[in-house]
Length: 202
Image (cartoon, rainbow, N blue to C red):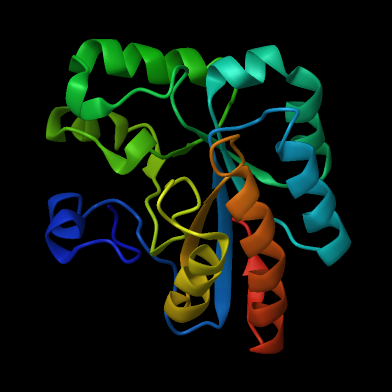
């Protein structure tokens, strides 16, 4: 179960995080979590290149260490990088010091000032430390591509129905999300371009 638009109370809980960009500009921001992996990330990169779109990739450090060539391809194509911890940790279930260490471990490889917590789960204590080091990026529209109960068609509907000026849109370049993301992403790009949105990276 998930909400396509983040709930008000959670946004208030992490009110200093960035959930949406400028609502007065007809611009949207594609983001991808959990890569890079050889089965999915190159497909995303090829599509973005064909569509002349720059995006933001929140990378898991362990995947970067295992797939440096794909990581370098993200950089070479001019996309923005974000930190997504080294081991895709759930902040609610992780000691704060261990969590911070894991984020810093990732940042030895993914040198960036952007961070997104896996699962969107972060304790106040973790946020307090990380917010002094990073811009904490959340999302305005969750595609639901990772959810086993969500169909590819529903995934596309989620983003088409909820996109608005300044939306930060969350897809995943992961095996779990592959089928749904590969269906929804091209359709969403076509829709957004037809509606006159510009795609930007963070």
